[in-house]
Length: 459
Image (cartoon, rainbow, N blue to C red; front, side):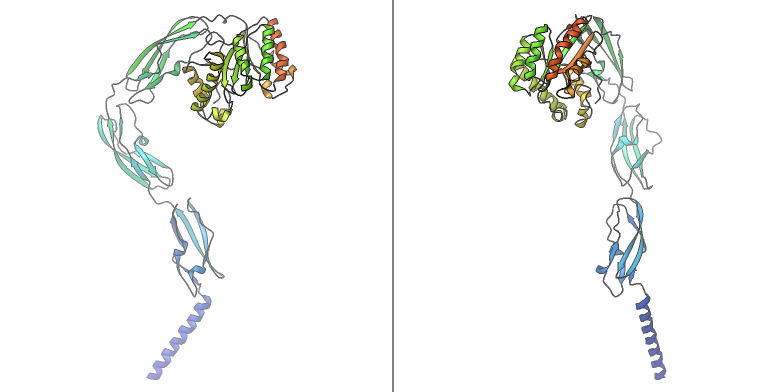
């Protein structure tokens, strides 16, 4: 009996030994907890946590390739490698986390059609979410509990509660920045949309402007503003617009304008103007301090001194409205010290139609074109360019040809009297003689009494 038991035990041991040898040579040494893993998007996962054990080895000797990006929904195959052995694992990056929704209460009138977005303070989720108001009736006066339902692009859902309060709105809109009396000169224009509207409930009341103004005809006009919010509350105001006679309105006039001075060329320009007995306008900068005495001379000889820019630094001037007015005030103060006169005639660097300002602040020219006028300035562009802005040494014949191309009763020519514009000086006398022969007179720009040339705003 004992012999039989021994044989059985020995046989079992041999079988186990042989099975162990077979397992050693044939079993895969890398054993995983799972060969198909789901991992939450944007989560951090240590893929070695998926190792069950390594036969006859250590997990620190296992490499895992490739690296996985968990920031987007996707599927990957990764490989665990130990010595010459590899084990594949399929990875799915999934989104199973519902949105985190934070709501706020909302108060409005009895008319507004509310939207779920008006109740949402924040919504955090991996993907974009859509929102829905679950209530069937949200129109009743008083307080209503609102249920907002949020679902992300993976179908994960969240709902939260807040309160909608509806009250009767009886307060009419308020018209700000309103002027009851406005005076302009014949040929100038006025933007009736400069008013600002405020309402306690309606962010966008209807505005109706009733006017029949002819800016070319001197007269007294009435402009009626009617502002009504969505609840029917109405405000009405009337402005009186006086269009005063402009003596230059029916004349053929050339306005010679010179930018970017003073320089050594300014003196030559002044001599030519004096010889021809014509007046012009100089839009000056602060970049020619050694020639500032020529600004005084120009003013004393009856020319208009306009404000261009102190620095002519586009990046600074057009980075903000604050920077623009700091620069404008600086050149204004300089001109005042030289002439004793506060000029309100300006020209934007690059003109009002410039696009270079887009590089520094989107929409700044739309803002500035309104702001300068509200502060009492008038800006002037040009309808004829001499072409001398293209560089130094432009052929005088080219400048003459482009300058003499003007037609119509009001011609405003852009020249430059800056350093290097010697050929502009060379061309000037012939330009003046051409327009005199065509029956034009020459005038300096005078705010309120001269043709106003505005370009279209491109920024």
